[in-house]
Image 1 (tube, rainbow, N blue to C red):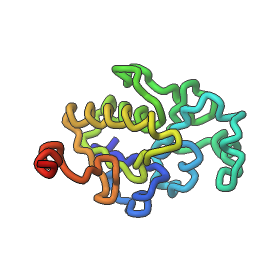
Image 2 (cartoon, rainbow, N blue to C red):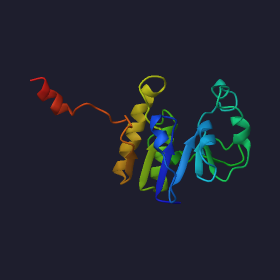
Image 3 (cartoon, one colour):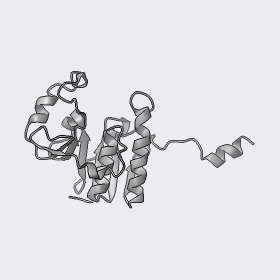
Image 4 (tube, rainbow, N blue to C red):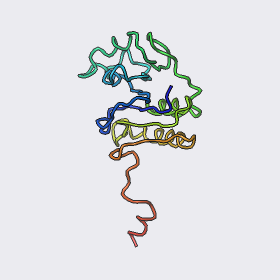
Length: 175
């Protein structure tokens, strides 16, 4: 294991990801199929309904279920190890059971495994869709990571922490 992990989502800042030696690369669901096979060190399939859901019957997800069932050189984290390369997600990594999407599971695992640097590529959790309720858990686990001494790396275009001004600056502007 390295001391750095890059968590890869589908968001806008993923396009800036450059693969480097000495970094573990983790991806989610069918997005893992888009990471170069020699770079992917783990993936997450945390949906209990991964075999039946319609979510994987769309363009871009063709063959995902068959691909997932294959033997892989990386770990597939799942709630229950239902495929060849799978391991059961260690729920003890979630000190507090606060995971509303896959990103918090990945952040909690990175802390638990002792990573010192966590990069987030394509993890913007833009407002709307399912991310309105996901952002709070992502912020919580990012805070836990920083509190544990992890460096969190976000691309400058990542809007997770985008605000126009600090609270006291807004207060001064209204005077």
